Length: 323
Image 1 (tube, rainbow, N blue to C red):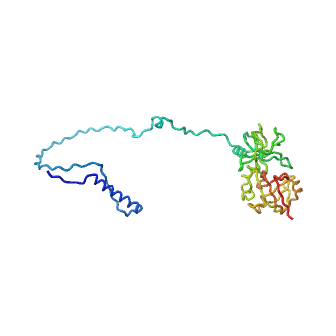
Image 2 (image 1 turned 120 degrees about the vertical axis):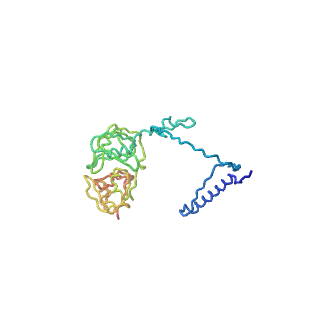
Image 3 (image 1 turned 30 degrees about the horizontal axis):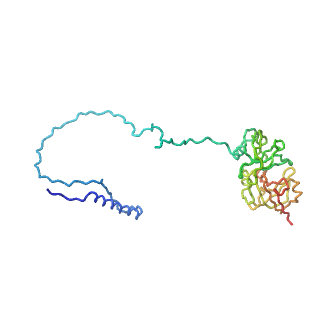
């Protein structure tokens, strides 16, 4: 009995794999070019096909007609089939070690930061409200001068926001001082000359003393947006160095001001130095003086930014008179 020899399937498979390897290299080399020939390569499983066996010819069996068998019509009613994939009704996924999955429920909102509380007060309408403020730092204490009321400024971070509290510090117990950390509730807000102010507070308390306000001070000497971003700087603790571009003129009761040119803003009449008249006279301030005002709240009158100094002290004021 004769046999036809054939290559083992393992050899055929290796040849096919080799072909795939060459095709893979070709694809990488041509960068998926559409002009490259494409071939379908099929690899069968790893098994041997038995050799073909030849047997003597046998006469074919006689043809036997088969009767036609006709199946009666028996239509089946349509039966809806359930979806192959249904909702997951099983228990929640649990890792193999039995540890329950982590709780992904978001935590509840935490308390507002001091800066967020101050921002909420600044955004409130004028009139009665109830806005708690906690952990605020007193950055400046101001005595009443002219039409400017006594009060103090507060801040929570170096980039603000800040707020002027138009409440006489001497009426509070204990009396306010720069560097105090305080808490209270704002019960009324007002606006004066564009500046937002709290004009009534309750539940006042001092939580700590001696905080360093220098870390809350921004040097705006080279800032180009001190006027255009006045709403953002309003009442914040600043240091500014500049040159008086004119002699001082009236700027409200018992105050004078003049245009101030800085490294960041020049020739803008909406940037002024403003001081009490008594300070103007004692220092002899006039056009050409170079001044540096340190760690005072930035005042404003409508759209005008007013770099302000209220006392002649080495920590807050420098003036160089022209010769």
